[in-house]
Length: 599
Image (cartoon, rainbow, N blue to C red):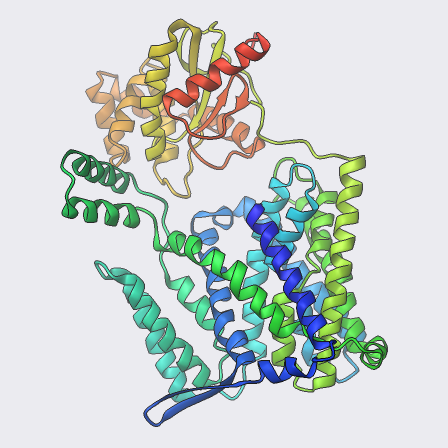
């Protein structure tokens, strides 16, 4: 949140600086500076730009690249990969796109500015999250995730609008070059190494091709980002890095150092690495420079009088402030009360309304579309004034709504406390059931980090002995571990023959082999009745037993494994043995109480 807050503060400062600059005695230098010609030439080919277009066309391509990386990550392994979690914020985003556009057309549609409806459709993600960080509502995590997910869909919609409605005069030759370049970018993932520089070179080629084709070149960022692969860390990659690091520790030399460094880098998808690398540049360079170059609107009496009389101004203000609030809140309420989806635990509609109001801050893409859609200087200035006024009003309205909700209906923290206490008659556990310390792990048999956590658990049990009991509960993350659900059900089937922990140990050791035939082979290896085991795998009660744990995890909004609860409280931080032992002992020393256990 600190970076979000700092980024938002810098954006505000850049916006204020632009407004002060253009309205100062040297205000004429604002347009002159950003209109400075910039030319690029290669042989007989040349391209003529200005500093302003370098920012809007080139730097903003980096912004959209960051947005595209986030979209790809969310759709592949994140919030948007699960229908139930994605439906509500996705519907909210669509409502937040459609209703503002309708309000704009109702207000300004007859004024000759109907083509500028795209100005009001998008939310500024950076300002939105930054404003949330500055306002600091109670327990903002659930609202923040909802708004981020919604903003991803919102950005996709805005980019689609730019591509479909604000692109004209296409040149087929350059467009063909762009298409071939996109195909080459899609093949880069198959290179054994050196993919980063190749992506960079092809991205530059694609930018020039789109610019020459008449397509807004900022779409380069999205196209490249969506073609970059993303994946969750794989067990074999993590183990390979560990082996390489061990080899380097035993025999430090440049070859092992290079191999370990490469292994560490390759174990994380290039998408995630790029998100981390690009985010600071976007937050602290691209967006502030964009604000400085685009927010300079003359606020003299004549401009303000003209804006207040212009339907375009009021269409922008009402579209962003009223349209976003009504569209997002209304769509959320509609879907949440239907069978299509539901809000995350602990997130209420009234808090969504506060976030919806903040979503009226439409700064970045709103100003960009205004620059594309409105060539007439006076009308463009009126639209920019409308965006600035709407952003201030939306921020104030969002702050007021969240403050009222926090005061009269404060949110409840979700997932901080164990929902269901340890029950020795139902749960799977190791240790003495009446032990004073309880550690509950929500895990996944295909998760490499859960496998590694078993070593920590063994050390904890060895150190604390009869003073601690370890409890396992199922949380199969099927979106990234396709065999996890069946593995959990296999463990439950094994429990009917008293071999839950034995099969769990085997599955953790052989996580890359969890197909049905593998599970049957493990049952045979452990001396179980294989026919009975296979029959129990088909028993609905076994599936429902796993689902009970999954439902508990869902109510606590647990999204990753392993997740530990120590003496009834969620453990946040490292889960090595020393950290877990410290956490287990701390409550006993501080309060003298024992962990919750079902009677």
